[in-house]
Image (cartoon, rainbow, N blue to C red):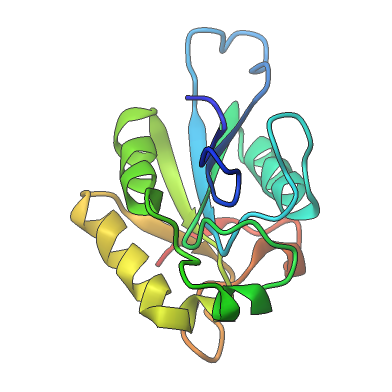
Length: 164
């Protein structure tokens, strides 16, 4: 599945990155999906700091590719914009979240959206969406004081995923 934007490019629904697996593993395609807060500047070819951090985690854990999904599809470098926009979630976000998790060979799903996930109770809605898909959700580190999974950009690089 390619990187998918809305036609107006206001919302980004999926972002995929893949790399060559280690020698001897050519027949497998282990993929992890991270669910972040919202897309920033990453696109079909360019990574942003969060995507780079997630790629580093995925490589360290032995995966050969990853999807970057988000609980809000609105593209913005400032999370405060999520509070001002009339539709920060985006019209196709839940469909693509479910489709990637169920049809793209994802073997690990990591919740990674931070405290702003409380906006519109969106974090809880996505937790329920993923669990209703029959998938175990994971996180990095401890939950925030607000009970949200932590954002990967602000965590140690040697963490392992734990079940949410």
